[in-house]
Amino acid sequence: MNTIAADLQVVTVKPGELNISARPVALHTILGSCLTVTMFSPRMHIGGICHALLPHLRRGDPGGGKPAAGAAHDGRDEEFKYVDSAIKFMLESFSAYGVAEDEIEIKTFGGADMFESSGIPGGIVTVGAQNIKMAGEFLESRHLKIVNSDVGGREGRVLYFYTHTGECLVRRIINTGIYRAYLKKLYNNYNRY
Image 1 (tube, rainbow, N blue to C red):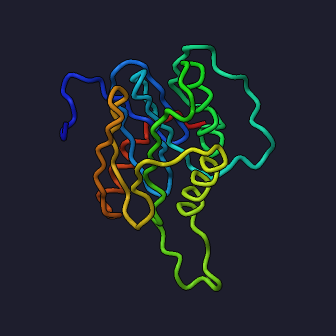
Image 2: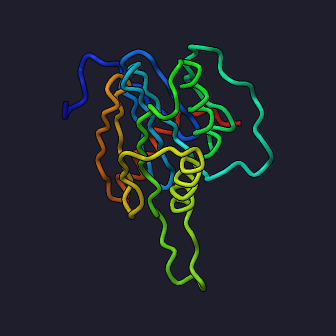
Image 3: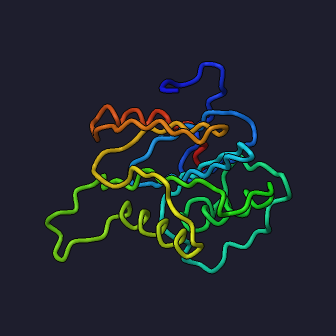
């Protein structure tokens, strides 16, 4: 499959959201410095992604209980903004479906250096680089391996993930005015308070 399946529902996952589904859908997201972690169970044909903005939650444990057995999650929560807590929630959700951690195929995407950081004394570690590092460290601490990734660089990415196959389609996009205008249009449908 190398095109978006016309017969699948396409669900956009925005920053700070995640989606895990046991039914076939195409999950779509657009990434800059944010990181998407995809998880797929070949045995159960369950897949999901998170769209995390920052590496880790700074204030203690985010709390929250484990998901109910077999419960799909489709939405936004404060903890989903963070790579570590989003991955933790996803692993707990897969466990609720009866999927062991060692049978999950994990891929990572994004973490671009979208903003110029040269000229700063001593340099800085960009948010994108911090997100990539956090995902790697968190997964390694659980003895989980990333089977494929497209991370870093200076270009954003458009990603489609098929929940029933685990396949990812990724297109790199150049950081231009057209890209920024597209992001503004896509994310302007939030309520502002």
